[in-house]
Length: 118
Image (tube, rainbow, N blue to C red; front, side):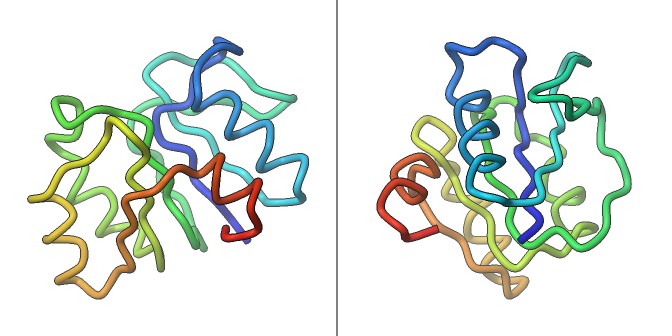
């Protein structure tokens, strides 16, 4: 499954870093997008809103104040699922994505991975 970690960080104390690392260890095809370039486990963190294909799940690690232009980007990617991790909840964006037919979850990617719910 191809997963986009949006809000990726090179800081190993950040949940986005931990999630990317765990996703990779569980065999997922991980794409990283963040505010600053870098890499996690040899995978480049892209910046901006790169053109990506075949994204199944977007897992968000940016707060609502940093989600202003996210709707158009996620719509362009057409993922099957968008996960709003703790602290990223945005009822308006969630409703808009759901209206476009995407599965929207308010959940923790780390918990989902550890409990086999991902």
